[in-house]
Length: 182
Image 1 (cartoon, rainbow, N blue to C red):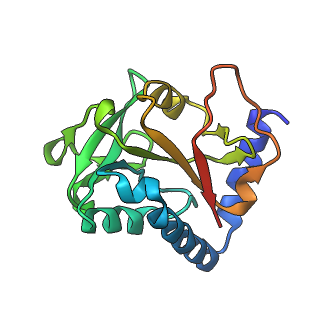
Image 2 (image 1 turned 60 degrees about the vertical axis):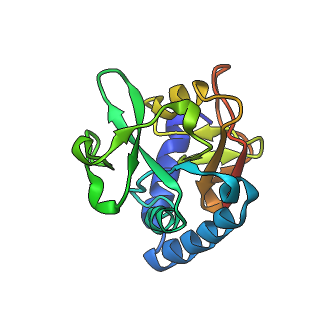
């Protein structure tokens, strides 16, 4: 299956999922994540602001802040086609970015070096059984993951219906360490 076809299918499934199930499954995924040793040990965690039917990460962000972790969210440098990790202290530090996704406001956040990230939580439209991901097609996360230190683990979040037998990929694509789903 081509990447564009799989993206279209997954966007439709995300859109058609009932909100009550999305909230319930997102809560299960949050609980699984917070029980992981990788998460418990991490002092600095990069999450993402969910949108468009994705696993809801806002309770995860609040929970990680409450646990005293340094919480990072990506800001999009659209022209440079890269993600910039920025620390936040509250959800009020966010504003809509270039693609309509909430991201840290420059005035309320500070840039964090990739070498200081202990754990990166990654979105995806689909993941396969080898933990490769299909993103939205612009390569922001692919480039970001490629530049992470070896010690930094990346964990994907998705709903069970987003796990497929195989994701179309290029030789430059990298898998995440694991995928959490419900």
